[in-house]
Amino acid sequence: MSNKIKIEVRDVNFWYGQTHALKSVNMDIYENNVTALIGPSGCGKSTFIRLFNRMNELIPKVTYEGRILLEGQDIFAAGVDVVEIRRRVGMVFQKPNPFPKSVYENLSYGLKINGLRDRDEIHERVIQSLKDAALWPEVKDRLKQSALMLSGGQQQRLCIARCLAVKPDVILFDEPCASLDPISTAKIEELIEQLRKTYTIVMVTHNMQQAARVSQFTGFMFLGEVIEFAPTDAIFTVPRNKMTEDYITGKFG
Amino acid sequence: MIGKKTEQTLGFASLFLAIGLAVFSLGIMIYFIFAGGFRVISWEFLTAVPRESMTAGGVGPAIVGTFYLVAGAIIFALPLGVACAVYLTEYSPKSLVVNVIRMSINNLAGVPSVVFGLFGLGIFVKFLGFGVSALSGSLTLGILVLPQIISASQEALLAVPQSMREASLAVGATHWQTVKKITIPAALPGILTGVILSIGRVAGETAPIMFTAATFYTRGFPKSWLGEVMALPYHIYALMTEGTHPEAQTQIAYGCAMILLALVLLISLAAIIIRQRQRAAYEQ
Image (cartoon, rainbow over all chains, first blue to last red):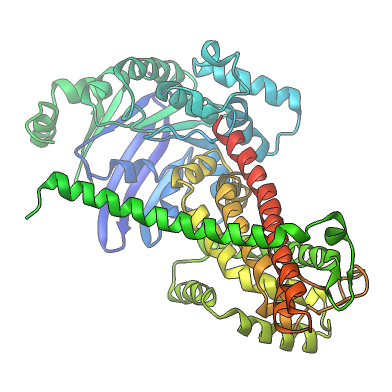
């Protein structure tokens, strides 16, 4: 288990208009580990994860303060290129959202918009990403077909591949299995376990078993606060906070 | 009291009656136009210039003139309208000013077309000095359908799921790349639907071109964007209100109406084919 801290979250507050959605959040995200965020609906975990690639800024009337240091660099600082942050911090969304383009174009898109022109290199990276996302055997004969023809689970792995293609450092998973069946879910979990060797992963999940299975660190959030953050083993066996214990044992949530 | 089954039957029956009535009126209209116009249609009618005070010859210049006006209006209004819609949906902050702009555009769609004609006369014909010409007419018609194209494009852009934009931004695309490569292509079928409707509107309008582009008679085919043109809707109007041979003229008017319908269908068909291709590329 790596002890190097990849991302430091320091005193982050976040508001939607008047609503205080995140309250003085602090957290360390460790490199090459999976950090899971759990908590009941509306506790702020999605808001929190979307800070890491500054996706919340698409919503009007949001304000925030505090710092998020990605390898020591504050991603909110003036002059930071948000586009480059989003390339370095990839994201896989709750519902598979492939582009209505071919399987191949879904992956080459990110490469082209980031300025890659060499067709051989694009080809190589598209295929490598599909392999890394464990999708290659299923799509190798249908690269030209629309991505919308794939099953939900395949689409989600395509979205993971799309994210891998641009070589991020960190990958955010926002409830990646929320709309998938158990078999597809198992495949994604297996994949996340593999990806952790190369990437730092932060994932939001509603499923506590999933957090226990795939993560090394877990943060329990409630009403915009991080109630407890600890190694996953600890949080699921000896939670220090009464509220955490009640949540993971299913007394509320 | 009537039973719920009877009520359902009555409900369906009235819906059926409504659609029947709509189809019937449309059918009747097409029937009369074709029945009236069919006899005068010939190769000469389609390609020749009018002769003997409009009672013989053809309406070739009017067909070409209408084509000029429609093409010019769409070439002008489509890029402008799409650009406005993109700005309003993708870029403008959600503010009071933008809401007012949006409302004004919607209201502009309700302005009577003769007002656009007067506007075109003032701006294009007089002020900019384009004279009564195909150019002035095209621009006037373009402005006339601009609100329609903007509204349709806005609807189409708003219908593109936010998740598509997020997916693009999440791989490091800029806002502009996202708009250009993801949002507009995804909205294109909807935008083209707006264009198809606009084509019908532009081809059929008479009032906006009366003072800006159309003339009753030209000796030959239109040669320049800066010349007056004959146009089918105006020609129909002229045939029915002026001249000294009402019977012969009425027949020709029907013929023109038929050609106008066919022309709109033809141009729309082109747009429909492009739209289908686009959809197929997206959904296969």
